[in-house]
Image 1 (cartoon, helix red, strand yellow):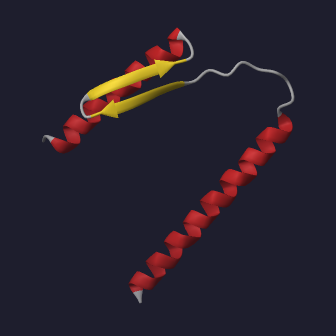
Image 2: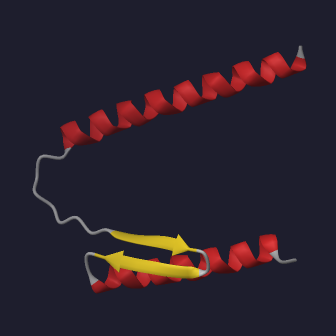
Length: 80
């Protein structure tokens, strides 16, 4: 009985999250008509080695900082 409630609650939360994502995307797409600059960065972790890329220098530095934080958190969680 208790497991069924947890499964049902999980499914409802997942469906609600998907619906909110679509609604938020539709609302933000309909409101932005001006041409703005988009900046992006990414970090790919292959084992302990981060591969960092970004559209400009500031975003790449942000990626470096986030990769360092991720490596410290992984070290704390897995090697304590």
